[in-house]
Image 1: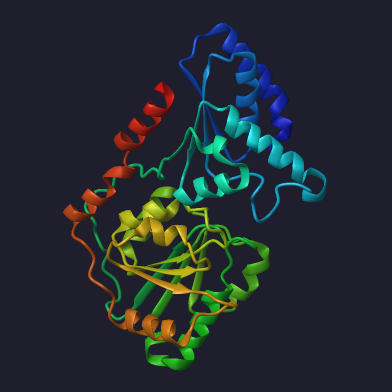
Image 2 (image 1 turned 60 degrees about the vertical axis):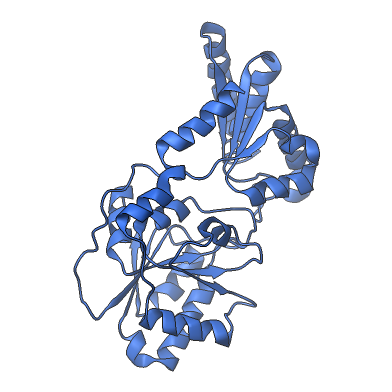
Amino acid sequence: PDDACLWYVPARRKMMRLLEQESFDALLSVSLPFTGHLLGLAAKRRYPALRWIADVGDPFSMQMKAPNNKRLYGRLNARLEKEVLESADAVAVTTPAMLHAFHRQFGDKVVAHMQVVPPLLHPAPGAQAHAAGNADAIGIAYFGALYAPLRTPDAFLRLLDRTVLASPTLAARLQVHFYGEIFPEFYEKMRAQPLIRLHGLRSREEARQAMRATDLLLNIGNASEFQLPSKAVDYLAAGRPVVHLSYTDDDPFVAFWGDREGLLSLRVVDGDISEADFGRWLDWLAHPPAMPDDKALIGQLQPYLVPAIAERYRSLASG
């Protein structure tokens, strides 16, 4: 069971009624929550000829923070996830690293009909407009939730403290903004940092406008080698330099960014970055990199727009 398990019974009843009354070309189940795939599995058992696509946003049994009591349900979690991956006619995952993780965990059969479909960017961005502000200030903005143990702000807070000590003049120019849910275990320590302003949850449009208006974007990496935050493509579309705190050797965000301009990746080891990386950070703040123009950026975004992603799912649905 996961947090949607109580939904299974009424959802299954409705799904079976629809399948009895209508003819469908395919069934698409999406996770998380994993319960959605159990509905797909139930439909496939009753209607073996129905083409079923399982779209896996995040793995279930391999989550760092177990979705249930792992001692009681760990084996059941793995068994059900393997059955879903083997039974679906096609499986979509977000990153190559997730495909490899499933292969290591469950073997060849689960990846035989698995494809990588990157995150979707919608709506397509228009011309980039950097809002005018304090020319001397350096705006840094983070977008998304923070929650232990997967994504925590502690290393970034230490980075700010080190910056204040090493370069007070540079630190005085920093204006750091956090958009998104801040879990209680981090709230007080973030409120205590005078450089940080917490904005909480905002609409998608307001968040996108803020991304384009800031000078620099902050990404705090996952402590997982196969989970890519959906905002990765939004960061790319914003056309702003990105500082990324990396917690893994095979980092999915670094792999996603590839050799594009504008990324400063700082490796976090034992909760902090090295002196060499700290020097790179100070230099990067003082001399941020140039970014591609609108035309070049639009070209980079084509694989993540609706036509390209729709074609990938159309291919999965048709076999």
